[in-house]
Image (tube, rainbow, N blue to C red; front, top):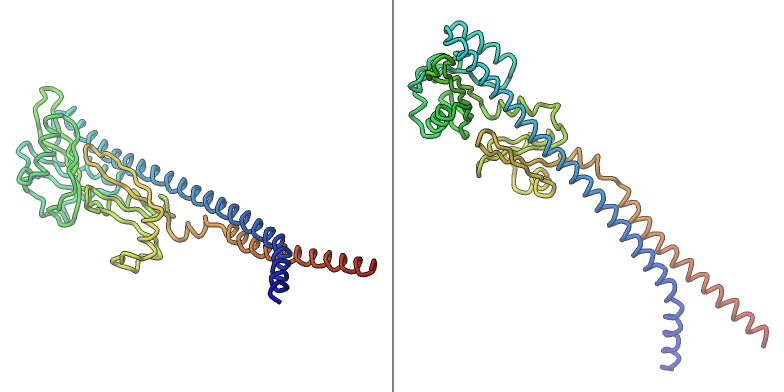
Length: 313
């Protein structure tokens, strides 16, 4: 009895070998194709995020530098004219504010580091007659700008008006005798400046975080995540940041900002195709179907052979 059972098992295994091999081959091919498509798709998304990161970094650097150079040109006009009345300086400052949005204020600092003129004064009254040399970061930037005859930028500081900001100093040296006549100062709130530069037309499908050292100074997240504040560690937003985030650094007059960019859920939904999943499911179904067809074909061949054998006997 036992030999007959073993014989039947052996016969069944032989009969099933080809259908199993066919099914396994189709499954292996399907998995290879599925993984290849997923890898290509992920690589494409990474390339897009990398390109967006470089573009955003360039946008911030160029737009910030435009504002710095506008302030430098204002100082050069003072230097070329040998001085300015407050009325002329105010008109110049107001023109600059119109042309370059993002400023909190423009101020004139005298040679003793005191704030004397401010445009606009409303909302910036606390800065009037303030001694900028009284704080280390501000004094360092002032002295650097004066000694090097070039624009200088502070690290992120707490503004006298309240809130976090950066200060840009453009020194004034009269052309005639190189006498030092103070600085034109650009005051920027970090949030307002970056919101102005990174408006809704700039990389709208990407979230952005900017850090100075270990401190995050700016974050723009996906619109669908704006109601979640603060973000827990495992929200879709933070998971996207960890999975897809790309980083770059920009140097703004010696101040280093690290920019991290990652796609929004909407962009991922747009970029991620259903094709790999369709191929995977289709391949698995096809493997079962081909294995079944192969088994039926073999069974039919065995039955035909049995009939021929019986008729010959």
